[in-house]
Image: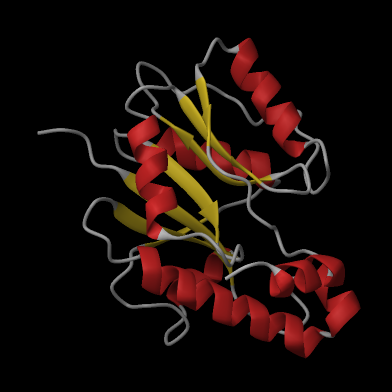
Amino acid sequence: MSPTRQLVVMAKAPMLGRVKTRLAKGIGAVEAARFYRRTSHDLLRRVGADPRWQTVLALAPDISVHEKGVWPEGVPRIAQGPGDLGHRMGRLMRDLPPGPVVIIGSDIPDIAAPHIADAFDLLGRHDAVFGPADDGGYWLVGLSRFPRVADIFSGVRWSGEHALADTRANADHAGLSVAMLETLIDVDTADDFKRWRRRPA
């Protein structure tokens, strides 16, 4: 039996003033929270029940694992745990059961099931896969985790234009073969929001 493909969706409890704070500065906290809530729920509807992989919700703060009525009941939940984004993603990569792992955020509105399927297919031929965002970050990262789990998240400058380049450099330094998916818009600011609204359907 082949190892299970595991899709991890990293999400935050959709509390007003706690999600999409940079976006909220431009469109208001209420509209930013509404965007986050709608985007995350639509994403889980598109990819959460796909039989080609097991979807897991990694939640922050950790206590939100136990909240009722916020997230779909059929999707397993785990806590993200402490540390910066790199520590949390590294922990997920190390601790999940054997098999390829793909991690995505819950707030990228254009992620669809074919993107996830392509990522897992690429991990059959490569050690790592990235979905680049147009701001220099990335909306997806995946590792085959075979024969080892490489640490590719140390020293990364998060929330800026260097995140992908830094993580890719770590992967190259570890000798991993890397594949890339298409570039998507990461809606972090009001300008991003406007560009996303204007994009072709």
